[in-house]
Figure 1: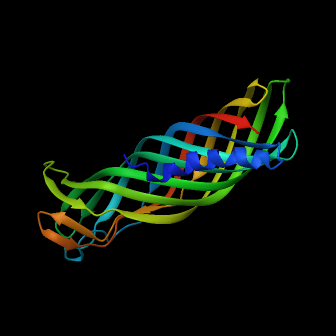
Figure 2 (figure 1 turned 180 degrees about the vertical axis):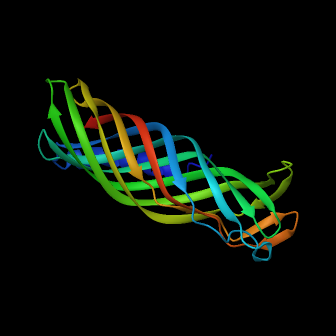
Figure 3 (figure 1 turned 90 degrees about the horizontal axis):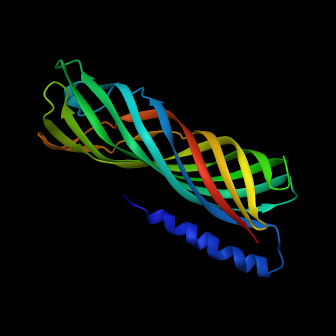
Length: 237
């Protein structure tokens, strides 16, 4: 599992105390973990090597997802705040592709990885001195990558090829709701449910396997949605 972008999280957290020393008392930052699922479809009808007549994609499937990330923000008053968040989300993905010209079909399996950066607004309604409910909405960008893709024959399960990965940049939108519990004057635990539009994914333009290294038309997954349950801890400065 690759966590290169996660170096952003400690860097963000390290910057917060310096801002607090500058006189700001309403900054907060923290860490997030999540788990969930994803849904998507495909409009690809010409995937794979052109001489194969075009692969028609169907039965797109996602496995459970896991995520880790961080956030940093500013509270204007007890109810309103804004924050920037980063999430690294990973899960399994697969689909089938049929090739009508030859009457065969393939199965594809791999990983779908997203690095999401969003700007968010939040509104909290206090239920007690320590507990509040919160609603959030955010917009941003996501870097979606398909990796570790393996093509096998659907009928026999025999290996056919490794398919090149690719990173696609897509817009992202997210809404959520949750509960906040302040267990110390400066520390808050959160439990949240969220739904996000995560854009699309696509493969690279080559495959290597039973036919050698071959150029292909990319396989694309469109309009991916994610539903997540998450937990967070935030510290105010």
